[in-house]
Length: 324
Image (cartoon, rainbow, N blue to C red; front, side, top):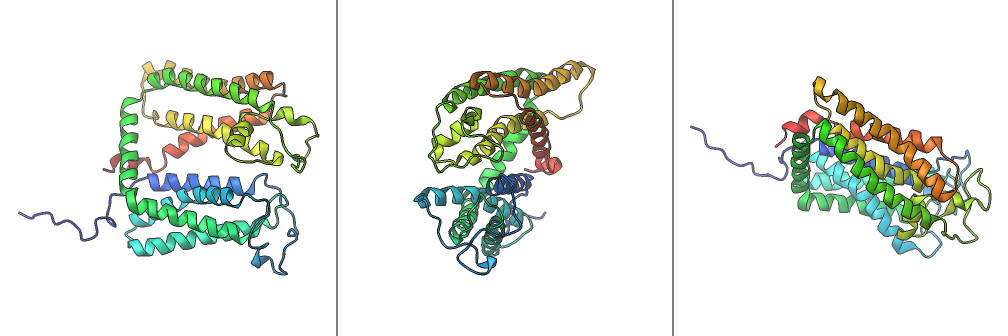
């Protein structure tokens, strides 16, 4: 009878999980959106201190918000470093090798972003961002090295428990409560957005007219509580706010995607209505409270986010369910 001998490097041979793909994809999507919005590019680089665009635009950014920007950049790249570390660990890489790989991946991604931002008129390209973003990727590796196995295993267990407990009928009862809570918060933030003030240097989005501040939504009000925002970025915060509402809702629906019988058809139809109606209803409520026009774009984006959430939670579903 053979006895089980534990491996010499249990950290390296920890169980694999589908959550590495989910964390990595979500982190990458968030980074690209937050660093390139509003996705307006020019053929010529913005004025820089150096003759070559490969040297980027300088070292630091003006404005006196270096500490806050540095903290936000580190937090932005931490999930990326965590996801890369987990993925490489699943492939059997050594801890030291993963550290260097995560650091290099963070540096290369950040440098490519900063290089491209030279051709984005609304963005500033600086080496300071490359350093803080790389630091964020390293911090993500350190977080993974300290408690990565615990966090990934815990997330997998929670997922399995939710899949076992959630049914179409239960999800159909839970989603209205979820949306009502978000709608209440959205109305309060929309009322707060009516009184937002911006300095005279804030640039309006392309096509917007001065005095059209009433079109701001709850996303801008929420972001304003965290840090100083530019008026030209306000619409992007509305997209992020929609993602906070409808992406998790889609993931919740994705957890119930199991074979169902004829008795579940009514619950399935009710769920479909619950996902189609809230984006339209939320847009109408905010349009009334904020005295702003309705947005078909926002409704379509919300529906896309629901689908994306369902697909995301089912990425590598087989490994997530069988993993222990």
